[in-house]
Image (cartoon, rainbow, N blue to C red; front, side, top):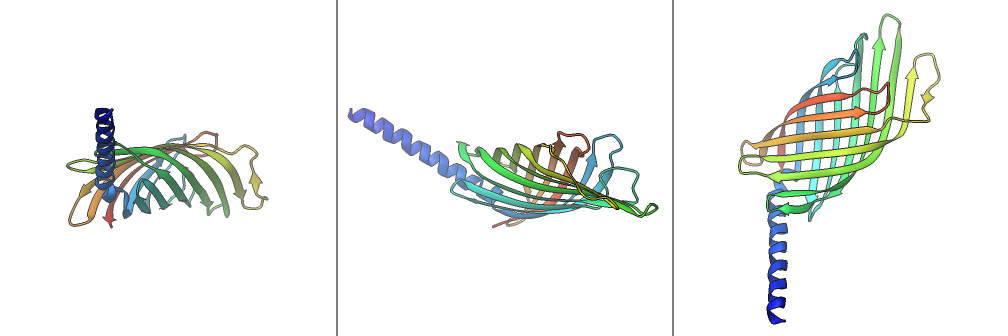
Length: 224
């Protein structure tokens, strides 16, 4: 009985040590504020490619994490327009469990708002599509000898979808588009608490009419 108790205490101590090590190793990965530039392309037919800027903040404490992001694209999602832009706002809240001393994974809840707008100067018209999505997925963070990595895979259900065209009343769809998201960021240390990072992200809306987006990011993050 005494040996069994010692064994249980030994296993418990090792599990706590592993969790603490993982918590410490991903601390700098998950506590960051970053700014980035990107190139984003719409993979649907007649899709357009445009550059953009983004900001993101992430907090991590005792397994709990939260992120907030905003992104602006300087161009319409589709070809054939004289102007336009895209705006994205997102939130994620979740919990990471230590899988190894250097890797943590866990579930998250996410919300995202997207607005895609197009302008036609010749027809003096403007159109926009706004989408609200709510859901969740799986998040992972890793601290490697040469870099830090974050990755996510999520599915957000459509809450609302509204289209607007100049001269017509807004049209709200009864069935809004769902959103499948996946992405990975690789953070390379620069100096002190600054990182250089690159990322690749894929956002696919399930209903026809909403763009499917493939984006490459390059940026700088500051850990705290």
